[in-house]
Image 1 (cartoon, rainbow, N blue to C red):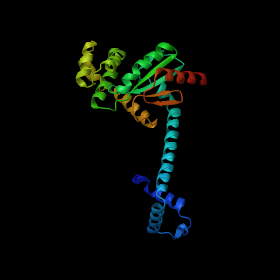
Image 2: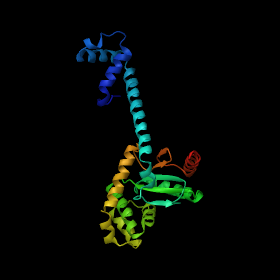
Image 3: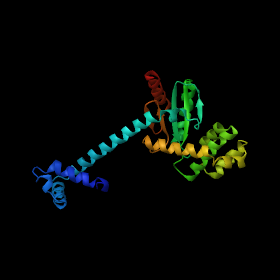
Image 4: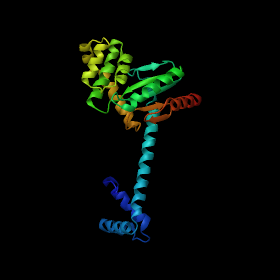
Length: 246
């Protein structure tokens, strides 16, 4: 396995530190001498490359975790109480679940019934939707249309229809659903380009990146980040733990 280019110099340095029993003082080593020592160390002990890479990856993972925790702390208000994010469930619920999703994500569609079961079983939960369309242009069109449907009082209906249609979400399917729901299609297209829609999508992207999420669905419940599909029992357990900690 080849170490990433960005890790090469740290690996070389670690290789020398791990494998060279005796080396000249650092100030006397030229760059060529360092490379030669590292090459000799690697040839004699090839496993140290993987050890060095593992050390660097662990360091990067720890830094990413620290960044995500800082994001949770610094952005708690916008995560849970963004006035530009749709909310369902109990608006006064003691525990907030934030879901990042994409309408073309199969696991997001599977998560829908799990979320519904959670809200049905626990009436003290509020759910914040973060539209995070990352899979296709159709996903972006669907997210914009759903957010724009708020202006006609039909976000929940549009969201549900897009999640349960069974078809790939693209411009054609979105506009067909809009007509079926009785939406004004011309107004919908205009509202899809509004500042509110643009801001919601930009904020979702920034939050997801800072939280270290790489796919959908992803959830935030209290201090817990939950990347990927999760069943209702696990969701309820995290909600209960969050409630008891609060």
